[in-house]
Image (cartoon, rainbow over all chains, first blue to last red; front, side):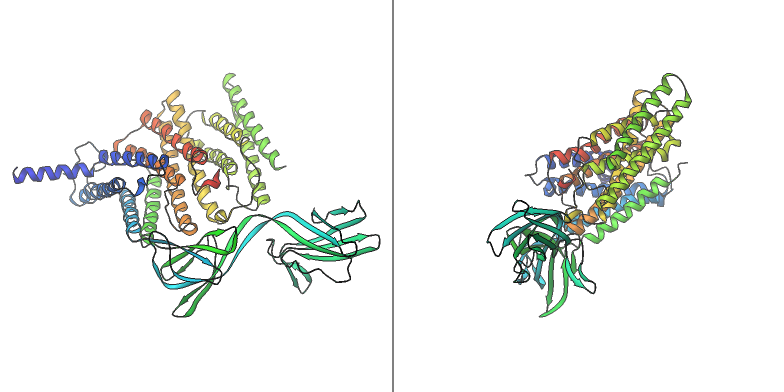
Length: 343
Length: 256
């Protein structure tokens, strides 16, 4: 093969790699693999060599296309007319919106590649009081600081249901029943009336007296009025303080169990310990991660059987800034394209 | 009261469709104009329903399939009002009424209970991500309707241009919605992309519309071929929106 022929073959190959038909073929192949990936979840298609190679070829196609059909065509004018009848390069006008869009996808692909190669993800299962600096999982890595779980709590929605157990100190009987704020329950064939005067989901005492700090059932309390033949007596019942039984001379003892609703939020109170000192103290919640020293700590799991346990996810992803830059470029490029008036 | 707004909205969409049909049969433009008024009333009632639900539940009505479907149907009618000047002929009003009836009818089959938000959804990203995605689906539904009309009755060039604008807007919003979802995922789940079935099918849908828009821009694909592409693309939208919720489980499973 002569030198001239070799150059012709390379040029043809580059033209093909830069061509829209090659792009459509790649998109179709990626689409089919994505569909297969969702239908066969046990096979990790998205991290396979084939899928990675297709993404690599997509990057090559975008780079060559951007160079040949946009930048080179703009710099050197005509003479770069594609062979497949594509209408994009009609001379020297540079379409910045198209250029931005192509560069955006390339940036996202490069950022994704960085995430795949350099990204770290590990879990940090902790019990209250425990501190760790070594993550678990396939990538298990050591952190340049320790994470101490100081406290863990689950916040629930108010279910609106309250269960009371009333015990007669004199007669010894005990009855468990459900009540609702504002309603009156009848016990012992109506001989005893129990009225829920007020419900405090998050009980505190402020300057005005008893009040609630929030609508979340953090410290549920009921103010009750128990009426029998001898008259009425008022009681306080606290879900978190079951040993509080009011005055010893009262005729009844009340214990209170609110039925919690669905989980509203998880709170992991953590301390980051660096060089033997607490560098920062903060609560990590779902949607409220903690960023420290290039790492991000997320609330990831809990154990319904162990209220002292919380699992955090730790990640470090150097690809994120590039991916986000690509997102921004893509949004600008496509908006520009959409708003451009057609001549 | 809340459900009454939605039921009344359904009744007005039905009235609009009947008025459009009567206007067509008896060639009375007055009936068609009354149909427009009924369509506007239906949309206003739907707006009231959504506002009422937002206020009553304390969260944006986009947290489950029922709420997002009503919002998407609202978005379709809203976009139709915005773009009606670009739509040639008289097909838009009847098509929107029929589609809204179908979507609201489907809502009747879904669980409409107001449920508290799970921790993952307790974020302002819910409003940003889901509203943009629903508007994208609404614009792509308009593109689908225009294509269906183009393929069955009218091969007007203006209809093809309407399809192009609706698909372009839908594609832009779909891209923005996926990006917003990725940024939210990075805040909530620790990764901007997890190959969750919903994410993957959104990407598949995005690839289909990318190919369609690229073919139109670079190879001047238009008319029937583009209309077929739009119909096929909307099938992917439907699967991403409905199919994934019922057939596949993943990080987005609470959307069902």
